[in-house]
Image (tube, rainbow, N blue to C red; front, side):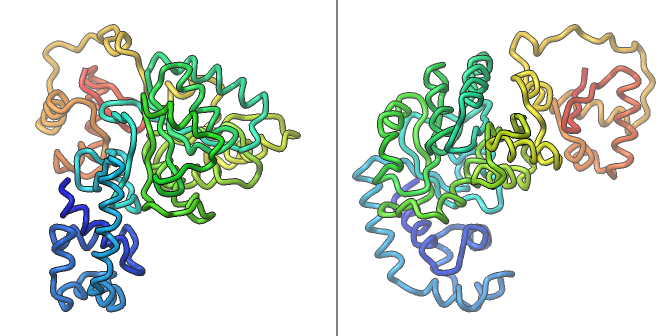
Length: 368
């Protein structure tokens, strides 16, 4: 993206009281970040959720001056920037309504067509947690996933270290700008990450790692991945916030169980007990729930189709759609075939009985 475009995205971030949701609403309505600043006030006020306070604040020219200063920092430090409308922006994060409109990154990050999981937990990781995490990532290596965490003490840094030991791409999401590193004790690991992975942040330079920034950081950790795994946690903690956010994004959440007397298993046990997380004891649990398969497992023994099966028009239409489009969710099939959910589900069941499709976890269906 050109500096001119980034300039207006940065300026929009400065507007008092706007937030990521409203910023996206304005950009989508006006067509670009620059157009937001050029749009007439009376038109902006017609947008649902955009009040006069925000509209008046947008007219402040100081925002562009601040943005120009940040552009210089970005260019001088060779920081890559992606906006929520660009293909370079993390795909899974695009589906998060409160995801940042801008994401800054450093390193060698390649997210496309990769399995991505987030690993979080207590800063006081125990030998039990280390033992599980070490074995888990070693077993996970066969899928070559990307490991996301927050570079904090404890579970975070151990997850990054184990990922690097197994030559896996790992990314740290920071709660401050890319002009500094917190905690400083993890500078060596952060530097090594740049070779296969790197750093993400939504924060400008000169932003300190303040308490509220860690909660904002956690939503990116949750939003980047298809699943969040809590290794160990007390009954309260930042990792539980990340788990709640991941759940609100309809992402899978896993928790490692522990003894009821262990302080740093209480949070995980509570997640499992309250059905907020699936219990995970090995990679097999992840494979089953996420339907992960190795390349050699993607061509299992073919189920013999019934020959000369009679299909009605609705069945034929859905079967043809799945043959063409591949794996699709129940909602997507219903929308594409212009049928209500209950009729779609019935038709899919008939196709399954006739041996023409197979169901997958997560209400996904695939033609055989």
